[in-house]
Length: 228
Image (cartoon, rainbow, N blue to C red; front, side, top):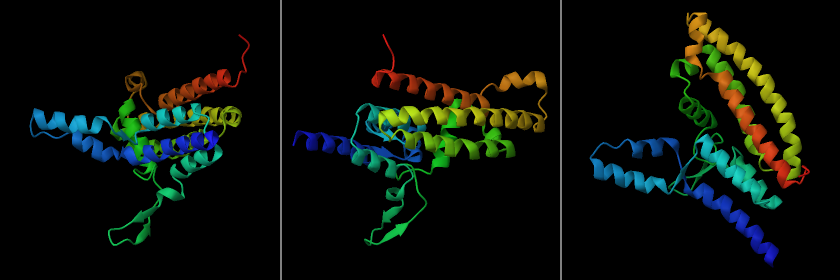
């Protein structure tokens, strides 16, 4: 009975996460209300208790979910919510159902979440809109999605699969570095001025790789792989 209650608690974490998430557009809209300080403060206070499907908040939640050592059923439900079949069905006002493209937690398209994270990182819009930028983005999206889904595995399997994912991010960094050089060259930016654009796709992939490496090292302590 106690084990069943523990499994239900893991599942409640997943369900409450999806119910509390609002879209990035809704969150930004409530933060940009300019009808007075009181209204802005009230909107910010109302949104503060809720999450958004930003990549950082999603990654933090997935990592906390990993530390819970959830059962396989709860992890499977979480996996289905990450651009899975559970995010495609929409119930209309007339009680009919329609299918839409899969979305992260059923709230936002994955490409919009990644673009929002790239802008927050400091990559300027013209880089994202360039041909090289779209090429880099087409590689970053599936690699990021794969990383989120891996977090739904058991800790021991997650530790092993992360090694393979790190190799993929290493190859991706070389590709993005090349695309970055092509992008700056096509924009007619001289070589000495490249350093003024430090926040670009290659550096973003490097930061993502370092964060993934940190998480894998942390898993080693959970699995007692290190001798202290």
